Length: 165
Image (cartoon, rainbow, N blue to C red; front, top):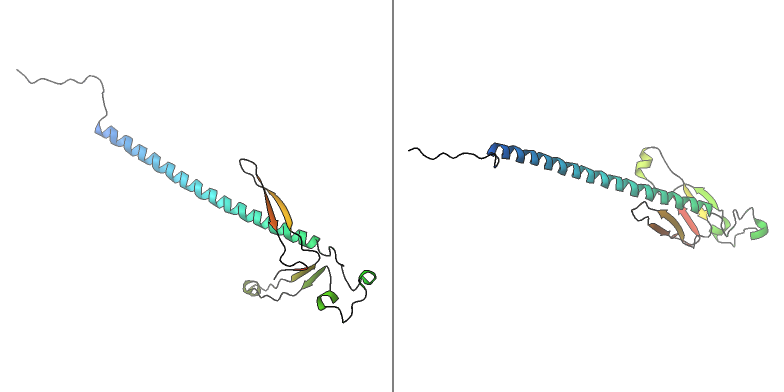
């Protein structure tokens, strides 16, 4: 009598080689998906930083524009030339009031080492006007819900605002 022979009835499973090839393929696909997700996350963070810098720059330029546009608001554009409204300035007037102008370009008293090394000495703007009230700038953010955010900026000094120092 011979030993019983086992017969295979169709393909009921995988061989070890097929299983190893399938696991290696799955591993490569998983690594590719992970690398793609990591790179897209870094790209998104970089774009977010650029968008934040752009919004900050726009708000800064909008603030500068409104400050310059408000120069002379509720004051004289030039007290020396506006004698009918202000009278002739004399020695009894405070120094800043004797030299009152809506917009003055002055030499900056702050030294910026990197600008000086490049031969640049930016001037300072002295703006006179009513800066006691808060400025509000609406910024529309492109989000999924379409939210609107209000940025409220308040001037540091009520009567004179120095830009560039």
